[in-house]
Length: 132
Image (cartoon, rainbow, N blue to C red):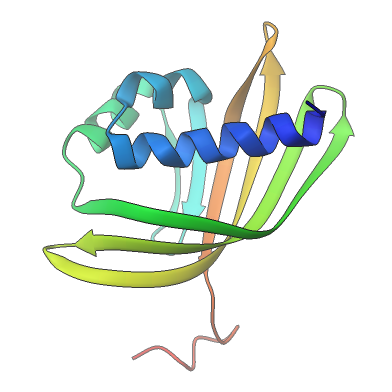
């Protein structure tokens, strides 16, 4: 398996933890703390906060699909993974589909990769004119 394939496999595995509710695997794949940025802003999340978020989410992920995935290694122990993602989920009891552009930064620590940063940007008009 190439290094690129390994990172993509880890990224996929992390997403699968959200479908499976596999908190322990999610924590093993996530740096402590990790940084998250998205439409609600930015946050630094430690493992305790992450565990709480996964224990009682306001949404349920049912399916995801990556497209246009790329991995760049600025150094042997840092990987930047970016891709478009289609998500099918339930939010507050209602079905929802969305498309986003995501980026994760994976860092090798003590011989294993952990995700230290994850961003998600909803796809659409760059100025938000397509949102209500």
